[in-house]
Image 1 (cartoon, rainbow, N blue to C red):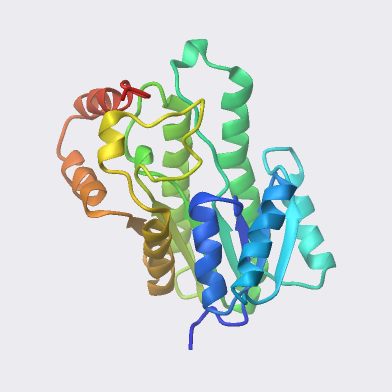
Image 2 (image 1 turned 90 degrees about the vertical axis):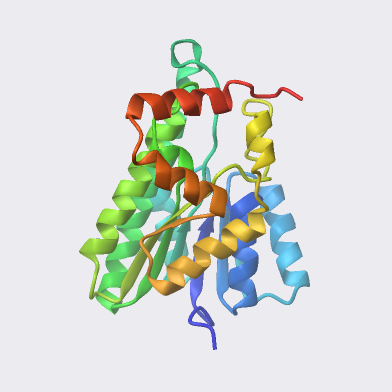
Length: 264
């Protein structure tokens, strides 16, 4: 029997991509789902899709988690509905492309609010009750971009570096409490994450992964108590050898990888 059977899982950014695939996997394992995203219409379509697959109980909550106070509103709404989260999947996120000095400052700050402030607040709010119950799982979705500086994705990569270090620290802090924290680091993945503001380069398209495989990697690591998982052999290989290279060289290599964004 799955360890997630009859557990309540809160999944942010659940309407598409990796978040949707994580929700599907959790539903298949018998978990009850609380799906969270900004777009209410997309969320309802996601819920209908999962219900058609005879998923367990599904609750939909539309919330823009980048807004100040939204994480606590979400936490309190879930409690008002009589639920205690056993699993928290912090997956909500977005990316932009461009040199920082000419970027939209509002988008950069919203990215920091969503990837850092909101994730930190949600983890804090849901973690306390988990520790008191001596059980729970938290999966934070970062990115392989978080392992190095990435010119033209400076803020995105920096926020994902925070997620990686924050998650690894919590995993060690919580050893022996019954609560597991894991960080999933996808590389380029075939999701709506890539859009008009952030298109994949030629190199990215060559190593693009299916979101289902990425989700499976993250959920497997969470079950096994691994603090960090990197999805895909090419991504794991790149990060391993990147440790032995000068940071300046790695930043330049990352820049070359992304600067051909949108080329055929």
